Length: 83
Image (spheres, rainbow, N blue to C red):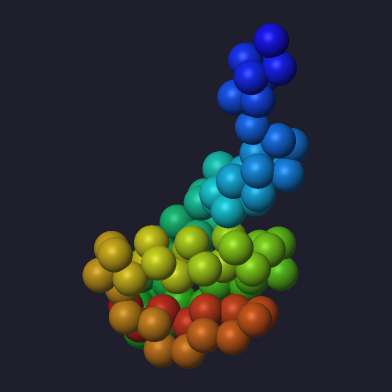
């Protein structure tokens, strides 16, 4: 009987997986920041990372690189993207 319940993942595993994903609000923020910089003919877009945890920051950097963006600077507090 206990083997059947062992298939349920622990809370820590679920919480860790959820914290790695970007929220809809964060995705909308990055999208609007990049679009606004492009509309203003800026050569760079600055993404403020204060609302991102370290796992979400890594995920965002990975996504931006996969989308073809070149990162000019990267710190714990912000990412500067070349447009």
